[in-house]
Length: 125
Image 1 (cartoon, rainbow, N blue to C red):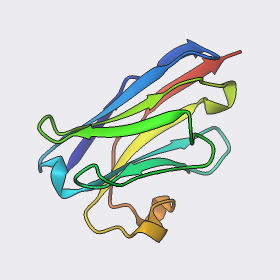
Image 2: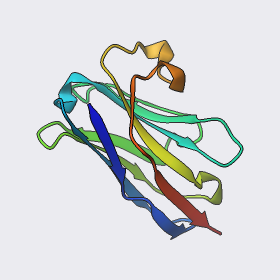
Image 3: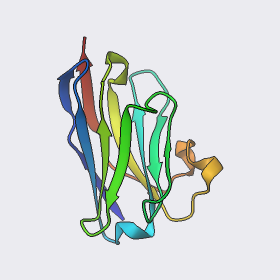
């Protein structure tokens, strides 16, 4: 499966942004989909994940309450809506996919099978 992330940009603190991740090569409904982010000099950080049917969603502590992950399997696209953005949200955001990842493994980027190229999000203060 190929992943293409988009929607990043330069915004101000307090603004909202919606990222998209389009999948191709195989229907996205086969996969658990996730978002990670990586700031310069830092490790890749878990942001959110959503199971195949969208019924189960999980969030990293740093974005919980400010972000919503969703998916449209008919469009093979996963979204990350981010609200009340802060300068510390500045990072490259990556989408990921995996067909068999278990709950306890969601936050570990090394255990996800497929990755997109990333989209830059910059939040100015």
